[in-house]
Length: 443
Image (cartoon, rainbow, N blue to C red; front, side, top):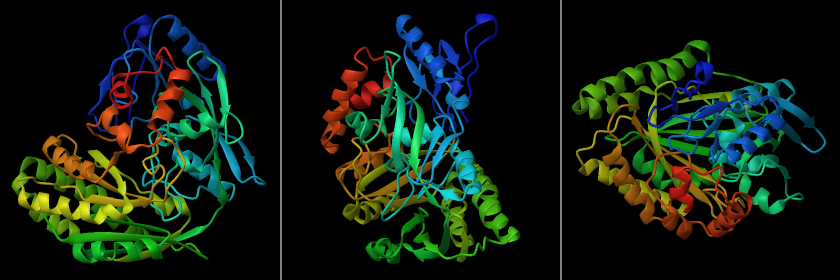
């Protein structure tokens, strides 16, 4: 995870590094506020000193969205459940709350988020602010489940935002990439705890792409992984059920989730990095190792899984009706190239939402995510993939590797100008700017 510490006796702080190790920064100072008032003061002081401010969660973004040479804010002390409103179906939590802690705390109270991504190591504000999402016919992103948030702006004020209060800020700040201020609290919609039955099943590439629309229509949550250099995929369908919980047996779970998905996969990737020519053979073995299984559990135990093999990732959201064509083009490109890809390609979906810079803003979307093992050259693969994704009007995930700039992004986000105008109003002096935001939002 990301780490940063202030040096002793006022010495320069050590470098901060993200989870994947592909982004580093050396901030002038690091603050860990224990109250909103301390955070407000830190922002005001930074502005007076001419320093930029960025908040950083657990460093799970692959972009430099949180990097700064100014003041790095660690919100981890602003954590925990602040209130639960069962009548309204909401929970308010500190912005530094880690998703795993939130999920466990909600489950103890018989509550759950409706949907989530496949890992839960991020803070709620970091996950929401970069557009983290799961897969779903009717729900997907974490930000779309937000009903309110508190934001410390560049002048040190706290703005409380919802559909009724500061609605124009709420429309943008749920996915704000850290450009509008520092989020201090988030109110999520929650519902009574429910069961999901997961059905995982190997399926060949031609079948899953031919039946993609059918699988999407018939399942609340559908996703699949394609193993490059093979015609093999693994599908996952999650649907609500009456229960009771019937999790995978401890031996089966250990084999699938730890041995195959982390242990053997780590060894295979290390071997592939050392001997790239072995990757296609390893991919064929890996894609056949996973077997069909069905299990039932509470949502976060079905949606999420441990990710201990480190990687770098690019992900693009495409109009849902374009995803199969784009994926077939990606497969053709890989098959005809000298590339050696040891990580599966992930495909997920999301319904349209109303958040200005959401990758699903105003359109039903499907996502294609490409990964490379940490420490292997990824530029050639990602460049070729990005060429395909952008040809289909793709929108890059704000927290994952991409090369797009404001000129391109203004063309694929109808509400891009709405967001940048709000940024001009809330942060005219660019207290929350950094190199990444200059590229993706313009000056």
